Length: 297
Image: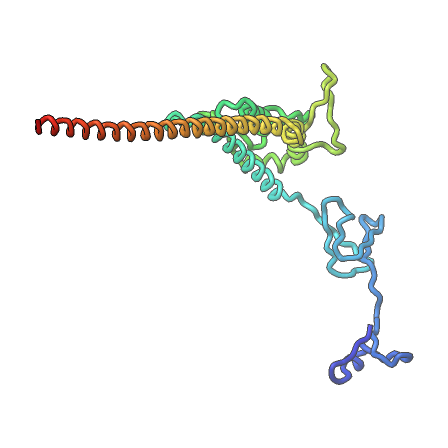
C-alpha cells in the first residue's frame, strides 16, 4: 500500500513512514509483525488464537486477554451464573403460563356470560392441557439425583381457584437454594445428561426420556411436526369450515332462486291485478252508460 503525508514529514521523523528505495514511494514501517495470542492452561496444552478472546480453552467460558505477560501465572476463579439460570427458568414458567392461559380461553365455558370458547369441548386441546399439567406436576425421571420433580425446586401449581388453575408459580428463593446446594441435580432435572443417555425400563425394555426438556420434546414433537396431530386436527377443522361455507353458499343460492321466483310471481300478480282493475273500470263505465240510457227512456 502507498501512504503519503498530507503536510510536513512528521510520520517520517517518527519512523512510521520511510521512502522505498526502488519506487521512491512512502511505505509503512512494520516495527513488529502481528502474532497470535498464546496461553496455556495448568502449564500444558498451549492454546493460540487470532484474537484476544479465547473461547476454546474452557467449554462455556470466554477468556479476555488484556495484555501480554510472558512467564506469568494468572489465577482465574470461575463461579456459576445462577442469575442467568434463574432468568431462563422464570422465562420458561412465564411462557408455559401464557400457553395454558391461551388454551383455557379456547376451551372454557363462562357460566356468567353463557359464552363458550372457540374450541369448547375439543378433546385434542383439552388433552394437551391435561398432559402438560401432568408432565410438569409429576416425576421427571431424574434417577439417582437429589430432585425428582419441579415442585422440589420451587415450581408448583398455582393455588388460584383452590388449585384448579393450570398455571405455575415460581418460588425464586426455593429455586436459588436448590441451585446453590445441588446445581447438577437441578440441571439434570431440566435437561439431558452428558451424552444424552436415555435409560430403559427394566420391566418393558422401552425407553423413557430424562429431564423436563426431553420429556416435553418427546410429547410435543409428534404434535407440532409436519403432518402431526395438530396439523391433522387443523386440517379436519378446515374441512369442516369449507363444508359449512359451501352449505352457506348453496343455501344463499337457494334463497336467491326462491326470491327470484317470488319476485316473478309478484310481478305476474301485479300484472294480473292491473288487468283486472282495467276490466273493472270498463265494466263500471258500461254500467254507468246503461243507467243513463234507462233514465233517458
